[in-house]
Image 1 (cartoon, rainbow over the protein chains, first blue to last red):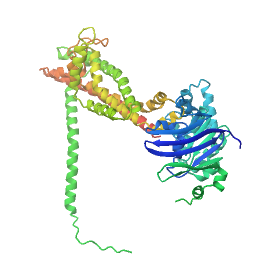
Image 2 (cartoon, rainbow over the protein chains, first blue to last red):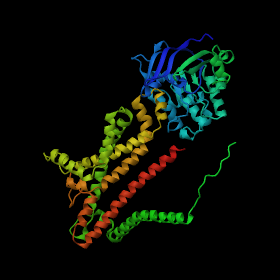
Image 3 (spheres, chains in turn red, green):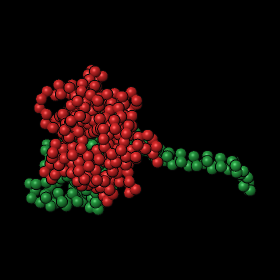
Image 4 (spheres, one colour):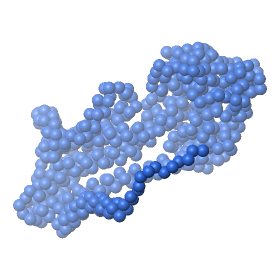
Length: 256
Length: 301
């Protein structure tokens, strides 16, 4: 594929207090591609994802050791501002979490926070179109975001993340709270967005990983309940001819 | 397959006795409820019966007088409104600020636990204690030079602010705590810093709860007589305060004063005063309930 890498993760360890949640992860993530993180519950894939835009800073007791280089700069360096990191690396959560504001203001919020001075209407319209939501909401931009369906809310959250023009979007099981049709809409969206964005997506759904991702990373949990990276390769290879036996067992459903 | 044999012993349901107990318990609880409702009903009936003949426009717009037929509670009504708004003005920024600090900024440790417990304890301190504190602090200590404070509206508002501050802090903290963490996470994920998250997402969501708590705290404040008596507001005022540095009187004091008079007519005036005070309190509580319901249904959509 020849894409350059956007993240270089080296020797990453994440602790919650004394508990080692993620152990020794080394991973390169390619630019403008979709990387899926799969693995059983509790294997640290969500924790790992939250390291990539410093969301773990917000969890009391969480500490991150090691290096996460984003565009060749370690985002955990003391002179790096976490808010800058997060404005360049957006995030979409498991459960749709629109603010209790109008559809319009849900998107305008991120722009205002980041000091956007251009045409707000245009920026809102562009983000909603990018998230394939514009046609459904263009006549009711001032309605509460809570009036939307779950799938629409999640696309609003994606639009909200896109509005501030990040380079990367992290998605933490973005479709797990949605019905199959809304899930397919999100998956279509992910495939469209990878043209311009780097996407890292955590999913429990193996078919989803196979459908949307270019590369897949498989995480496991060891006997101390610490998560670690087992294998990371092209999705094609992971799903047809994995190197590690445990990967194969997990993929094929023969898992203890 | 196991076979289970019945255990030896007999059953005597005694349904008749259980029914009697069940019915009598029902009546005991019903009567317990009625005690409260009936006494409130009697109180309201008695007040309305005595007060309504005295309740007219003139009663609301006249100053107090030695002659019952000319007496009104204009100065007390205006004083109460003054005091309520000044107390709110002092309490809301301080109370909400403290609540924001305790919920969003303060680390969870022994020290903040101590503060937390003490705030709830302060809410239970008898109001006369606040009155005496206000008297010694605002009236005597800060008011000794006469130009500053003394027995003024401002001293009264400061005293009542101390009284209701714990209530406002607790209500605001609850409202802030009820804001789902997913809102904060969503805002942080867009590159907002802490204050932007609080201002843009947390406070707007918590506002109805904060407002409700504040209104209820204010209705507590204007019903209090003890602290204002300690500040020694005037009981016989034939002018209305024009600014916060003037002396004042309030409805509970005016009512107390009328009740203490020997003539029967003043009892009627006191009852009319109670009706006015109750009407204000009920209106404020109704506003609080309406606000709460309105925003509750909205956030459930």
